[in-house]
Image (cartoon, rainbow, N blue to C red; front, side, top):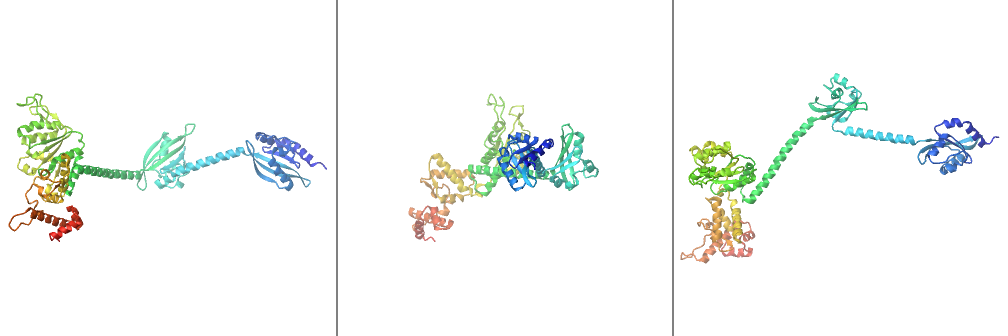
Length: 585
């Protein structure tokens, strides 16, 4: 019988030309592990893998791991299919099956294929698939509608946003030509066809069903030959954008209003830091002044003498856009009538006897770009009223003795303690000037109508006097209450004068009722001492009566003994003893 190994060799030799033509590598191994044959593909693959392969060599020298697998096949007869082997520069898939001769396993045939190229192709394919999925996700996540056609206007892709905006299902669009869709009146006109015609980006407005308004932009994509390969159309529903714009404008208006309110509140707090304003009526006056400060119209401040008209005028100027420019005060009632015209409008040289050689600029001219405060405007003569009206209407005036008009940019704030309506009706004040200066009227109530301001005003005045004289005098609470009850015909000015006199007359650290230099009606609610039997008023009795009245008033004003004692600066026990002494319940 012929040797099985010899049979293997002869068989391989007989088929060597055929086997060398195979793309897959083939190795035949006998039962002793000797390589009896290998084709050209096997030699090429293992040469690229930096492994030497030759007929007659031991397979274990080629791969110790592979030889273990081959021995297992020789022993069991079980083939090995789809075994992956990684070489240095490539990867192969091996199928190993036993060779049976005369019922005996005489060897193993190993057929393998280099799969490195396939794996590269698979990896590249996976990358393209992942890129495709990402592009699809991007297109679908776009809030704007996207409509893509090829260079022949055939619909390729429609995203869900387009369906939402137009209400047209993509199932009715994909694969169809835009020309047919226009013929069927699904669209009145197509931006895709416009792009194909003009070969450039085109934007159009479209109205679609449901009252929606959309803006459509088509853009061409060119291939290597310069031909349009695709048209990408972007669709945006500007109905919602218009709504958002309206909402944004409303939000801006609200924000501006809130911002203005915050600014006005800050300005109010700043003003309250400069002036004492506690009463509701004065807070309203200040709020109104803040509002009128923002515009450039004329302001008329009315109120009795001494209520603070000039201070409010200055505040309006400081809050206005003219704050960096002059604030000129002109007291129309304090300047002699013979001089007021030249003081207001200035004069040219030689205008009258005693005039300065070079002439003089008037107060109106000095206030250019700023604010001119005309206090007691009701005192202006008819002639000056005409010239002032000309300034307000035409922004020009002429110097006394001059002929050349002078341009001026001023804001007028006027003030008066008179009833201008009555003066107008009597012909003493020009009606046209009245309407010019009374554009934004503000009335300051007298001090007797805002008594809540009095205690704070008094405290502020005392504080300023202490700073001026470097003293530390304080007011007795009874003094504040007493001052609060007075009517003050002279308003704040009279209050300031009164407090300064009290400060000067007081001999102690505390300013008490006895220091008030006014008629007894201010002190009467607190002082009603008992006279002696002989009609005299001993000091002891007077002090006792005064003390008793002060205690009664404190108890009336406060809820508890402790609070009353605190107001009187006494210990509660001391107050209780004094109440027993004077039989006060």
